[in-house]
Image 1 (cartoon, one colour):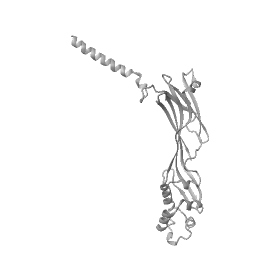
Image 2 (tube, rainbow, N blue to C red):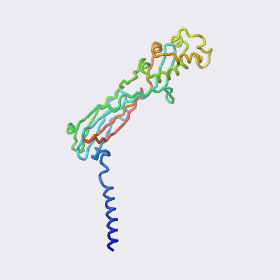
Image 3 (cartoon, rainbow, N blue to C red):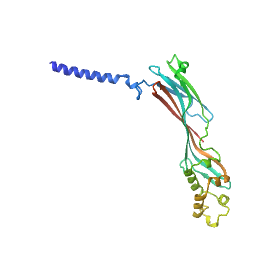
Image 4 (tube, one colour):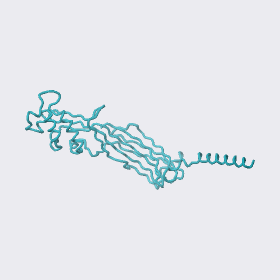
Length: 256
């Protein structure tokens, strides 16, 4: 009987331990350093802010032990675009449309750049007694920030060698005879077709692909602009005194 009693006691104890582990608030701890993570809620005054708008970002946060390092508001900006270019004698080239793309450039303008920081020492002024948490409001101007590729003729000079090679390949099949002759005034008749889909013969196509430079192309450009998306990701991080971060993220897109 004593043996059976001991076995039953062991089973009950094991169940109790399992029950304690399941209900233990350890699940609220930060994964990396054993400190309770902050709770964070973030809201926005608009889900589709246009260029020129001011996005209001409201962060509400609290932490079990009230041990904060800071609350940080960050921006990550990426442009993804094609090129809409015209030359002075009728050539038109669009490298990115609604459904297909022949040349797409990705420009990382900003990566997790802080635009507002609130240190722990300053957080008391944001305490709201009624809701028992900190409420901080950041105002983010939604404006186009220039990256590595300007939205003018200088865009050509900023293209990488690989990007310019692709652009030349596309231009070779769309250029007009008049624009080609501006680039190559002494081009022989063998550089042109006698009609058909393309103005240039294979000889002319190969010549443009192999010899055209950015400096040579620039004077012939009539207009050039980016066509695509301007993407802003807003991250808000509530960071505890030992570095545990709770992060809320939202991305907003506008057309270029």
